[in-house]
Image 1 (cartoon, rainbow, N blue to C red):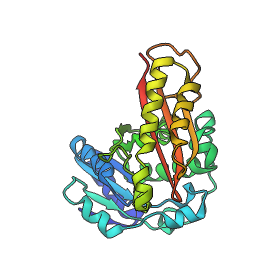
Image 2 (image 1 turned 90 degrees about the vertical axis):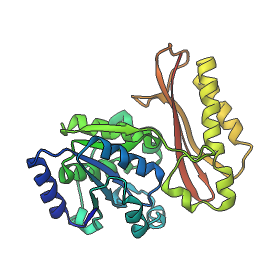
Image 3 (image 1 turned 120 degrees about the horizontal axis):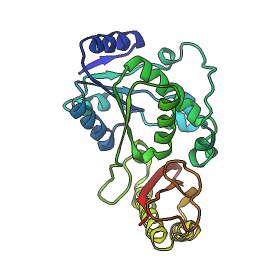
Image 4 (image 1 turned 30 degrees about the horizontal axis):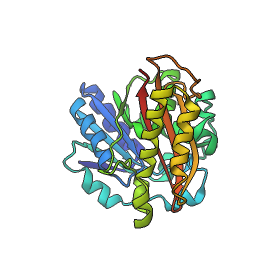
Length: 284
């Protein structure tokens, strides 16, 4: 596994691979890797000749400076974890390398970003789209891999790929969970033992909402059932819990017909750590 730190070095290598007819998979991350990330890398390695994993804590997608400062950074551990996964190149640029000048470009994803994460984190998806666009240009991937835990992010990047005609396939992979159901996340390592013990209740609430939605087709009832369940845990502060159309991300209307794909998304604070999760279901 080769480690590259400059955009020029990565671009030169990926252009060489392209000339040689080698397929390239890209796995963008912010580091603090866990098994969910490694599964993305293994999937990319199974489907491509070369795999680029980027580790870059992107400042433009944080609207909370304290959250950016506290985001876990463990570069040596990350590099060690990637060995043997099929990663060909680890790209670890500095902020100055990615943003040699302040970016002024503004993306607007309309209704896709006016709900959930976008509503609670102004500017977040503009930052995501900016850095992902840069990585697509530098890595020149045939396929890019994202986890479904960040469901709204996947929807936004899918729109980005479509609108800007990026010549690549966007591959979204299932959320990887701990044995107790908690979605794997880099932020989990910041949880205290007490908060970690309560964290699996988030997934339980989503499962409860999904069962209620499947039974009643009433999104408000499903949402309230989950909120009532979480209300028994004062340590959990729910930021949002939304039942939505899985593609458009707009609130799902009551009485939706069978065959509709729905997503139930939540964000919550637990012990000073912000966690997100979702479940996707096909109404029957």
